[in-house]
Image (cartoon, rainbow, N blue to C red):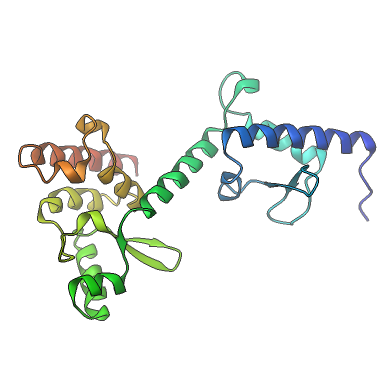
Length: 222
């Protein structure tokens, strides 16, 4: 039978838990804890921080909170000023995903409607194009998503994007990262948006070159 924590341990847990909670709330990183596999934090009806072990559902002890404190402050040479870089990266990735999902994308059904085809035909063509590295396709939960930026008004892949998509997809670049790179200002292009610049005959060769360089980096890092 587990004994109740001493008053000193309870006070230490409360102080550490509140300090960590305030710090992560200020950084906007509370939501990233779960994805990182770390203990999660909620606030009770009195506004107090409650830290929970995701594996057991039990509230963290003072010792566990001290371990979490050390883990989150492990980056850099000055722990007291450290920032949990992995959490920042997860939070940034989550923000980018939400921004991308706010743009146009298609499912089998909606792309079939755009093309005026059957759902089965749309499904077959999507997977065929994806297998040839000619269409960026993602999964979100149980949904298959086709980002709309790469399609024309008839729902077909824009031909000027094929030389850009192919090296990235062949390199097995993370599809969310590929979607983000193609639709946001890119450093390799001096701030141009790749999918837009690819439509300009003067800029298209530069976009293809940037895609090849990025694909080489992805391959080298895998």
